[in-house]
Image (cartoon, rainbow over all chains, first blue to last red; front, side, top):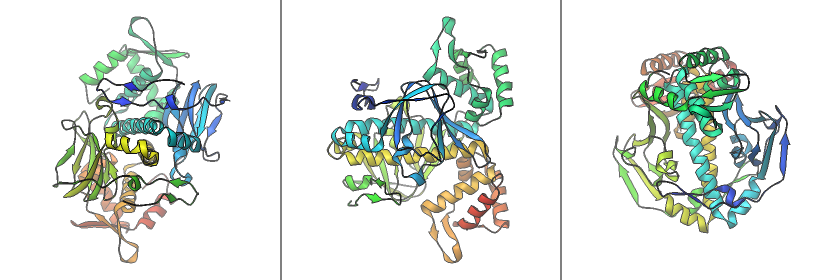
Length: 228
Length: 228
């Protein structure tokens, strides 16, 4: 996997961890299969090669809180870098048939000892994730559900959307239950908000996919900071 | 700063970044002074030497969302590792008279090129923070306010509490407004919950400090997963 470091607009050089990792064996998981969880702790960091992974935490009241959904080319499982007792109760399952590569944290530390840019690249990646988690905390603290849902759909459209004609972006038809687990509400309330978005003209959905007009959603969020 | 790597109970070796960083000049900030923010972006990672730092995000509706409070011996400012546009709108202010050391991300990357364990240590630290932010997301998604507040007080007592007689732990008297900005609610609702905790016998507070009985709070959270 050969990529040079990416220079950003601000001139800061962000390291790409993939430039320093050798290809690993590919593991396949069927839809709904668990990659790691409380009863199957992991010692590896993974890269999605095909498909999608859902990472969630199981709350004391039994409900799933979805931390994120990882599409192709994204890393997950970084909590393997911590000792078991610090990891929390995270579970990763395949949302569809999925292929991943895996490297143990020991392998990564060995490579980083020779190529420190790997560790810097991973460090930048995990700090980026922290900033995103902080945005979620902000949103959960102050935003009404509709606004949280709009932000979630925007984020999915940026990371896993396919541009179609006339400014629509197509994303996988995540269930309303899954969207609720992501924004911290019930399936019913997600359905209510999705119907509102549809009537307002910036969302269409079928069993197969969700179609979004990201620019309209962004304009709406900017125009009305208090509501969705 | 000489520390060896710490071996945890599980046998995993966590690297201590301080073992690899040279002492830097010490900077002092008065209570309320800004260390970095939107109009003063930072290129450094900081270590608190004395005092306390509050890191918050300013939401679109103007309210502060407190990401965390960093006491002595903790690092903050890791978003300096990202390009400016990815950092969000984080601000760090001194909660009291505070001393910090600072290293630019360039200095850290230079040292890490020779001593990759520094990058691994920081990487482990930032993954640990992500796991904690995920716990906050879980709590904001499913827990009522009283429970979130109890968890916040427990966390502060673990990181910055002083053991006193009879199983009480003393922490700084954070204002109810600050606690509200941390758990995502108003000052009034925090005051209501704090009074409840006091009547239930596991909290005492004065203008000077908050006294908590962590074991009683933990037992209570375990016994009643749905309420505080």
